[in-house]
Image (tube, one colour):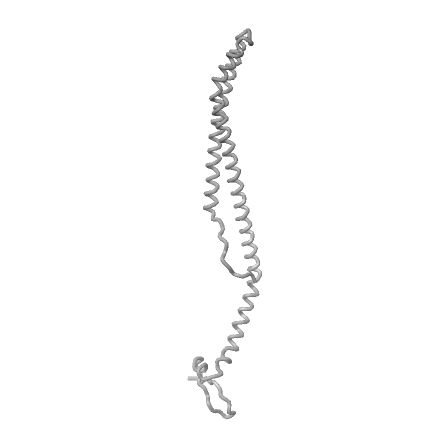
Length: 181
């Protein structure tokens, strides 16, 4: 028979729902950052296309190469720096989200294992119930038959049962008797 002990606390449905809500918030933030990246990349693409068109208009690329390079760097340098900063922030957010997701997955697996263990315990006890009930019935019947005999061995116990203690009789034995009144 398993030893009774303190039950291990399981996560409630509300806790799991709160965890899922937090995951939703993380995914929404990541989506917003991706949208910002998309806008930044669209701006960079526009500037790049304009730079290409300007380069095509000049007939001597060597003559204007330094000038074009400087203009492109001036136009894109700040955007590229911001893009790099956003990219590093996005990578950090992705790592945080991966860690959170791994934690949630481990918690979910632990909860499911506890539920499986609890269901197995319940199934074992369901198999034992008929035997426990039969044992209880036999015990009650045994006490119903044997207990009055054991209690009727002295005067005080006989009085508790509602009988009278017969101190002298023809056989010379002491007995607990019950008279009809």
